[in-house]
Amino acid sequence: MKLRILLADDHEIVRRGLCSLLQKHEGWEVCGEASDGREAVEMAKQLKPDVVIVDIGMPFLNGLDTTRQLLQHDPHFKVIVLTITDSDQVIREALDAGARGFVLKSDAARDLVSAVEALQSKRMFFTPRVNDLVLAGFLDKGHAMSRNEPPNLPTLTVREREVTQLLAEGKSSKEVATLLNLSTKTVETHRSNIMRKLSLHSIRDLVVYAIKNNIIQIQMPPQLRTETPVVPQ
Amino acid sequence: MNGSATATSTRTSREPQNMPVRILLVDDHPIVRQGLRTLLEGRSGWEVVGEASDGVEALEKVDVLRPDVVVLDVTMPRMNGLEACRLIQQKPKTSGLEVLFVTQHDSPQMMREALDAGARGYVVKSNAARDLLEAVEAVSQHRVFTALARSPQASC
Image 1 (tube, each protein chain N blue to C red):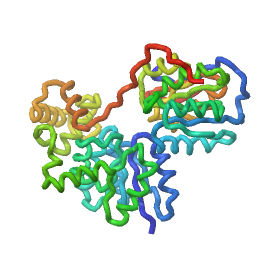
Image 2: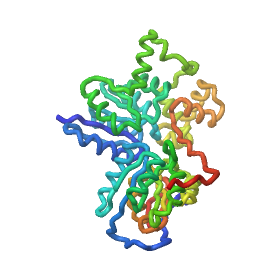
Image 3: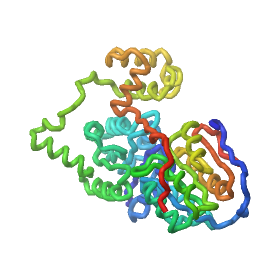
Image 4: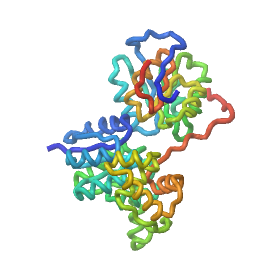
């Protein structure tokens, strides 16, 4: 019986690349593709894949919260997180969310097959940097992982995290309500609770919080050029 | 240009249909290059002649491989795509070569910057699967093709 894999990435071109890579492996099949986290959760509930590969930076529901929701629904899901960065904070959040694999997107062509093989063999797969961090935490009796952590923040519920992401993406309360099948009033209550819990005072503050806490990701453009460089011959 | 995809003819030196097109892919993520390759190689007559992972490597491969179209990312290590595009335009042996940006930057400002750098086309990565083939066809015929993410549909 083939190992069934669900892919979740908002870029179809990336999914094509991942599909092409994974389908070279005899015995594996990509059983579904999702273009955002919410779709991934719904598809996983229906398709019951053996492995779910989720990009961290996805619209509507990011990969970390997708992982949390998947494992809340069924703790047996095996999730590999694809990420553009292996910063300490992202590593901590991915481990905390319950990911069993952690692969840098830039290294996916090299590492993803190994990661799926590891999960297939009931092992975990992490980048060397994650391994170093986990080992450092073990050697330091668990304290190393908590160094340089941001100050303890009030915990948001799963629903509040969803609402936070959607508001930070620029959606209105009405749009959030439609997406989450809630009333606008309920969304506004969530919004008030979020702002109160986090001591935030504006949507701008909320966006900054969402970026700092990897709820949404932004890409900075390259610095614009000001002078003509020499042409290499 | 936001809200619509456009392709306009500015020069004609290639026959529009079934012309072989030699393509160089430049992106720092191999998995993205793989996705682009999968899409492009489905088109009869088109050939991905090489790949590069940053602007510096792209410049070297342009010299060696002489592609017709360079599909170029913006944000890359060592040398970004805008810089590479400007330098490609200044090379003496690149007459007829066209640059098509495929990037995550979904902004009119970045698109303008890319066109000012000499690119003939601009496609947003989130819509690359929708727009790429048409964009390569357009720029390979020296027509401008631009499409931001909110474009309802790519069309010439």
